Image (cartoon, rainbow, N blue to C red):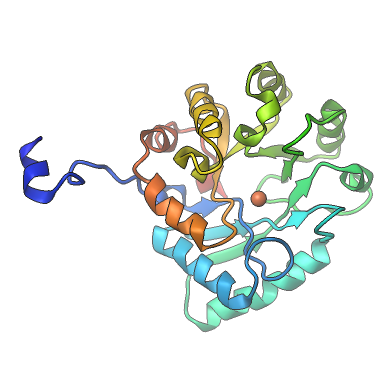
Length: 248
Ligand SMILES: [Fe+2]
């Protein structure tokens, strides 16, 4: 045991990563009552204030858009954003909030591309997710359609899709096509599964991630974020120079 550890206890030598270097979070569920995230305005404010305490200057919140469960639209999302923003202003919080969406890859998403406006952030980055159960069909077609309509597809938490774990060639192909990847910060805690943590670390080693997101739904995720700051792989990603969060 080192002298410092003896003096200050066994945690003295742990380094906590500073989330403030990210500046901007790109994935969360903070609009009350429209998906499985914040339920009330009060919930929403508690979560956003916790993000502010971590040092984020802005959150881009991304409610689910999913034809089976969460039938959101730019109207429900942006309409829900206004009261949250107003309450933050009223209470003197300087953290900014914007909204985009987390689009589930389903028939409705396909049918909207090029026909209806889709919510994006930054350089027309479009966050999308796929089923956790089955590998998607025609993902190439989706990516082609998005890109030919001027969107930059960002795959949410690729480390959470078990059907791709044994063969990284799918990830390689997606990267070759220009798909950007977003890591869920809490994947590094092992919260989703030990395998997800391992795959996330392998992807960090391969410099796959352009974005880091909290995917925060509730206060339990905030508690995990406090702990994840000890993870060495988080430090590795934060110092990689390839994240784009702070540019937003
Ligand atoms: Fe999400």
